[in-house]
Length: 537
Image (cartoon, rainbow, N blue to C red; front, side):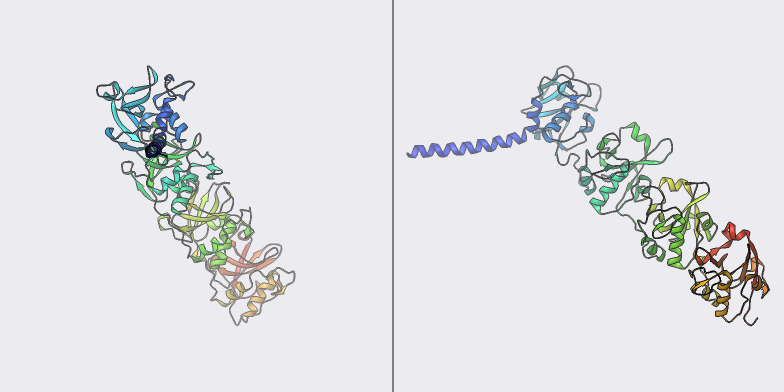
């Protein structure tokens, strides 16, 4: 082969490789503008983004980007102008967006796609989709405002890890109780999911509880990644949570569109509902070192069961009763309204971990629900709603704010086991009932009291009516731990007073148990009297 032929072949391969490389680069670079050229001649139609009907100026851009890049853009030019990165006119490249103002306004009213060589493709009101020049003195040159370059993977130019995570789910559907991409998201469920996956922070799953977190931020000091809260204008309750994207925009889970980014700054709808904003960088944990909370956490997820008072299932007061007994040796009554009558009232500002928090008129009139304060505005309780289980909720949750009744501190209800009779009494708790029983294998009411006093050196008669003749009479207001206390039913029932309105008594169903007779409608109604027995009598 001649030298000339070798040279021609070499040059041919070289120029072909250059041509193919440039063509591939051009195809990638011009994909937006090339797609737009397919729709030259389509008529103009207000707010439309369908080629078989017509395009508005923003509708053309929205349709082209969806087709070419599978990217969802907002419909209106003023919202599109808030996307991407600013580009100087002299640095324009094919595919950049070019924005224009109206004849009588300085605001953005129209947008086109830069086609290279000072050309733009735009949907004109009078001519539909056209290709026209962006040269000095031209119609569009005089109305030029600015240009943007859009990155399909980061339309909003977000740097916040929260927003990068949030943008992954644009288009995921809405679900009123949804907390995952598979089931769809509520607005609060979306915020909860993003925080957990982006920052490993566990937020509550409703908007009003999320409001209790973080630092309050004014509108003028908003930063991308801040959390926005919106209210129901009729009730004032917080109902919607969103992430601030910057430039007056937010991303949230919309009931009609799922995860979507919208402009809220210029929206009268959203501005009228704006409640506030928070910058959340940490989620304070509950006090897991407190013995009550340590015990309570063992039963997270235990199902709610009406009347339940064991780890097989709890109702609200059965849960608090069980936890207080196990952790503190404090014996609470079984109903929330009875627990409410005990302890020391506490102001909200003075609340401490372990205090009981009460609510009224929840599922029935009056005091009807109780939980244990766990710190940082959170409580652990057996909830009958939502998941119906032992769970943690924030006290700022709308429902609990509305139904809040008050706080009680129960640490003064400790049984004084330093008193010998009381110590012997508590050692026998849960011994079963046995008719005629006089030993720890099983007791009846008289057999129990007789046995306890025998252990401290005092011999009592076998039955309550005879015990009533021993010792000295004590007024109810002067009762002391260790006194004998009597109740009149079909027979005279003896019990042992252990302090704070509490008695140790034998029940047919539960054996030896602690009861607060002063808050029990049954025991309080049959109170008869009390006697004090001294050693040596």
